[in-house]
Amino acid sequence: MRAAAVSFQRLEVQSFGGPDVIQWVQDETLPEPGAGEVRIRVEASSLVFTDMLIRRNLYPVLKLTLPLTLGYDFVGRIDRIGAGVTRWRVGDRVADLIQLGGNATHLVRPAASLVAVPQGLEATQVEPLILSYMTAYQALFREGGAKAGDAVLICGASGAVGLAALDLCRAFGVRAVGVASAKREQAVTRMGAAFVAYDQIGSSLRLDRWSRELGGFAVVLDAARGEALSSLMARLAPAGRLVVAGFTAALRAGQGAGKWRGLMAKLGLGFDFVRIKSMSSMPFLSQRVVFYDVSGQRAEHPAHFQDDLTMLLSLLEAGRIAPHVQRVFGLDEAVEAHRLIETGQVEGRIVLDLTRPAAHHPERRRRPGVPEHAALETQAAG
Ligand SMILES: NC(=O)c1ccc[n+]([C@@H]2O[C@H](COP(=O)([O-])OP(=O)(O)OC[C@H]3O[C@@H](n4cnc5c(N)ncnc54)[C@H](OP(=O)(O)O)[C@@H]3O)[C@@H](O)[C@H]2O)c1
Image (cartoon, rainbow, N blue to C red; front, side, top):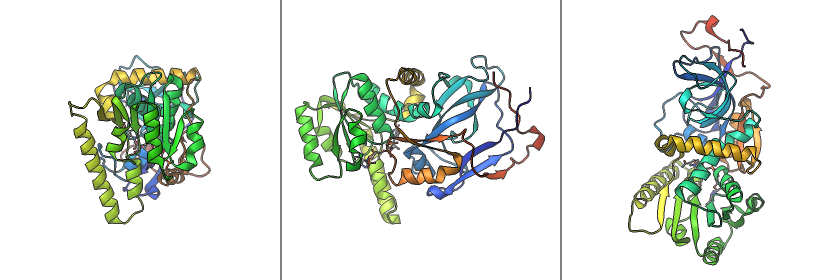
């Protein structure tokens, strides 16, 4: 059956740099699934700090080559099935974590890696679960071992991972103290957490007091790296865990600075990363320090990823969690969206909506070597 012509649009980076390097491009041919693969019509994808790191080639564990398509994750509907795939049908809704390629109207994935998504859920509510909530959940509960009734400290509490962590603490009966800038107090306390501002005098003393009153934190989730490791460890309970997931504070310090300060920030970050990794293998500590890496965990424990995303989707369906989405952007607004991320103006999440019609057209080009008549045909859904 023939369906209406569609185009393949995406956010491409052809040289590393600031938000202006993002190109909104269109091909006249859709990617085709091979054996064991499916093609997905994407509904929503990531716009997060990690995409910004990839755009600037600062992402530590990925060897990047240009051009690349941004987008760490996606949710969408299968619109074409490759040979040998029996598990999925056209029209099924799926999600995945992919590091690159999600900021596109279409993409091709191995059928085996996808997670089923319930039909009724809003795509812009599902998307934050795949990277941000997954990171918060696995860092707090799988790595940190947090349990109902525990007290935890969340550094970077107003960001994508931080607000997800607070939402999950509320859902699982974990007491939380959140650290963010003073202007984000309401975002943190709305989630039922206690709040400490990192940019106000006396914040360190206030955290020490919380820690004493609570007998030390069972888990410290650090998505910011704004404080010395020794200070964070001093706030742990005797068998507590410090789980480091991100370096926002260090990276913000290097941004917009001169070339040398930027380089020093990058070197300092690398040193910090190596130190955390080496501390994680110190067997004589009753407290533990670990670096959490969502893609590494997914590669090592694919079943955990499947189970955890399915569990997060059921929490969303039951109304037990509610991602804080500040704004939804279209493909034509991506540069503005990345500027907001880069200047620390996002509270919780922003999301890319790949179904929204744009006011104008992207740069157009045809893939070399592909005849025009091969383009623009999709299988009808259902
Ligand atoms: N390891 C992994 O697998 C993994 C997965 C996802 C994300 N990440 C990383 O984790 C980090 C956080 O990600 P995200 O998406 O949540 O970023 P985000 O949305 O930009 O949030 C960053 C948070 O850090 C806070 N912050 C900045 N400077 C701080 C400081 N000096 N002290 C305490 N908090 C500070 C910000 O607070 P204000 O805005 O109020 O200043 C905000 O709450 C990023 O580095 C990201 O790349 C890692």
